[in-house]
Image 1 (spheres, rainbow, N blue to C red):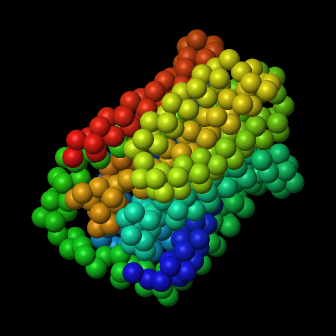
Image 2: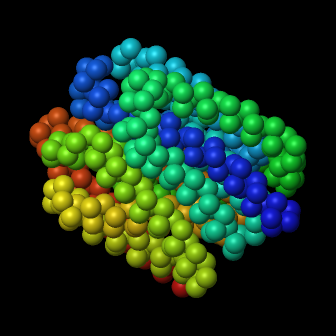
Image 3: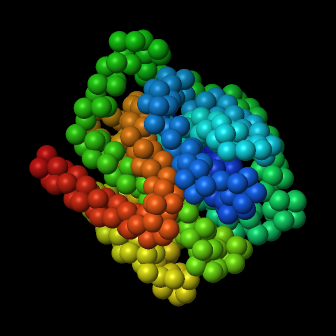
Length: 403
């Protein structure tokens, strides 16, 4: 175990990989109304694009998790950042739906390495019962990226640079530069040598044994359900909220800034919930509370219009969603039979299934809007996902009490 100061320094340095990723990821939702008009997209095509990155996790997550557990998070994260940076540059040049889809899917390939590399990094650097705070650090960094693209990227940087294509291009360039820098840090600190010390590299027998253990773990299966609903909600809200607010008459800049309010509230949930849950040993009970809060906020999104009620609903939904996020990542390393050794594979399992929800959230909102002419049916499904989180958290807590 490295000393605490060095460990936190590495987490902070790695966090920028998530900040850049979220800026790149949500640059498309931030500019979605403009891209729909310029490229000539239907709502269904727009929904597919908004859900394309989560869709890549479905086939890749388990494989990436196993890969991270055996290679280590250092080099994998660095290469992943370079991949999504180059893909963002390609997306800035895309002339039509298919080319936008292909480059967005490539961003998803790079994104998987960040999603599973950072929990693995934290599990290697910190004891299982102390992962809440460092997990919150990189999740705050992720939230900063998505908040920046809505609050500054869309209304300020994009117009200053000359539009969405220029913003996509330069954010890709910055990401590639950072990715190269992180690779140098990872090689110098020898993170990967520590991370893979307990694994049997690429033995087929060992990987199959790990997969059987992870896939059959009952507590982890409930965390998978929670992760699916969390991703359904989070990607659905961030993918469509600016467009929904614009459809209700709010100016594009204000709609983007209102969405950044969701992200800021999300950060509040990320910071407060895991800290309290770890202090009082109530991680599973906290999931029940966050799911209930998210349901209330999601209900407010349905009826809030564009005024004070909507702002309150956005904040409440963000707080609940933000609280769920670090718990989904912090619980697996503490589960019996999982630990630090299989954190990458376990989180990969959560996201392999969970990103089905991440893809369906944005896509269903778009499809239901095409069918009904309203965003209300899709946002009703988002609210209902909070109830599923609360019920699953209660079942997880009951299993803990029964042990």
